[in-house]
Image (cartoon, rainbow, N blue to C red; front, top):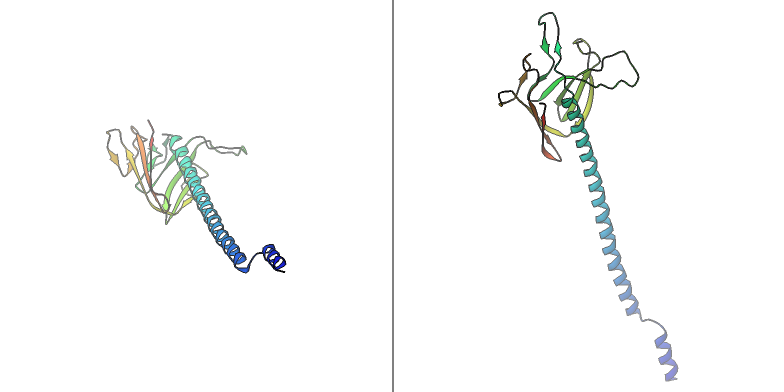
Length: 196
């Protein structure tokens, strides 16, 4: 009988062995869940950052397109026979650009009058359907949000930076434009465009 009872004891696990195995499995499962949860949150944060960065790059691509397509065409009106179209202040600037796409062949010019400005925490781009029509309301595109600050400077022919640009016929466009944008997520972002 002793043989039989010792044989029966070796066939199964004891309750303590099962509890130890379950405890080890629970610890490993909790650690694996924590690691997977952390990885999932890191992936979400990375995706959100990449989306914000892509939006920032899009904004600067649009800004670059406008700046690099500036036209120094004078404006004619009754009070001043010639007045350049580009203007710049420390928080807004605008002008006349070439290359306005017209895929529908609408009866309009290839030139576009535009303006960039900060409104609250948003960066807006305004454009007018007609170049010289001051009475019509501009179309407003909200281009970027979470903008805490915006400052623009202009480099004159004398090599001095200015916070304001008043175009003259002999110097319709600045030599360079510097833009500093303070963003909630990215901090201060600086861009410099050379126009000459």
